[in-house]
Image (cartoon, rainbow, N blue to C red; front, side, top):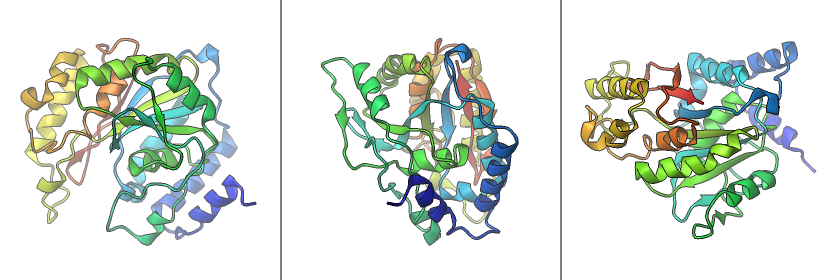
Length: 299
């Protein structure tokens, strides 16, 4: 039988040695050898909740961004498990991905064939699935998918943050874009953090792909920088009401988010925080192809 480690190694062997992700794997392995990643213990207290701008397969070619994500993960205790809500799974009723390693969802197009052969075979997440289900009211049971794997909003950043693929991961669907309901869902997930589960909302701080000028991809459009600055200031003030009314209050709309699924995972992250109005700590900012990479953690 082929082991999970062998599958991961086989997938990674498809990457040319000179590829930035191959270099990232070598750096990550050296970091593990020099200093093992200390696992979470109750003495560490609750893990933070994270909002990630997750990029796309092109993230595997961006050395600086990969380094930021990996260093962020290494600065936290190694989680017991990860629960992630991605912009790329909008589904009601509330659903969980399979608890067993499964074919990834390659929900992107136009990239090198190697990205469609990548694997991220994490351990079974049966215990986490039971935990999540127990936190939901009887009137809102969680549907357990038997075959849906992780989509790229989940496996792309996690493969960079935790390339060993040795932490159980589950993806939770995003059943609505109503900020109030997502904040409430995040509140239900809050206790997971106290047991060493890393709760992540995965989106992109701006996502106006139809309005990017691909002839000058390094130029940051005004709608992207204006929205990002507004979000940073609103988060800094702890103004959850302002953030929740982003459709009407945020500059750069609707260009920054012609559809809103990449912004709304932020409300899962805030809801899972001990105090949603407490200013979070920005870990990653700046832009890639004109889109804001802002990512943060909140206690």
